Length: 256
Image (cartoon, rainbow, N blue to C red; front, side):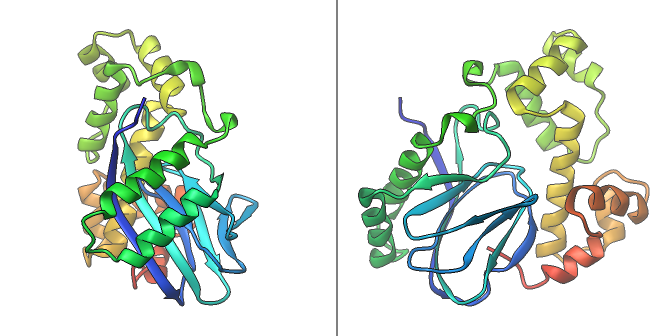
């Protein structure tokens, strides 16, 4: 069956001179393709994933990674959210072979320009095909199927209440589940415990505010429900490897 794709952003730059960003972590998926570019790619944990003209990379939500390039590149990217179990993929970059039809579609996107009425359809087609080519090992639990509606509601609740301290027992009660069954099913279908999911969402929103706003770190800490910037800084560093102040300085010019 066809998966519905919500395309958040599409970009293509023929001469991207600065594709070097660290500690990227977003709530949506990334698809990268850098045709005819050399010495560029993605770093994840202690692994390097070079991007070459005959393959792309798909990166699931909440994967922490960096990108690099030693020279100007041709860069194509899509930020997207598929419907269904978007959390059933392991947090890891995944290579997708770029077959000839996909290459032609991407070239068509880059040739027609952002104002073409065909753009959404072409991009959705590329993403659909790429998702269908994910390797079997990318899936956390192929038998899990679509997210249980109760877990889907829990995910939405966590994402919409990032500034609150939420007890698993309260969510389980709201969903009519035992706390043990709730925690087991949540981890089965998202790959992480509820509390870790909620905190990672907090840190991702914190990172966005550091990148794209001038809100002080003290005020961000309060918005995230923390007593002060020092508590936020300690937790942020566990996830991103650097302090909020250092992250803001590193990303002050924004990123794609």
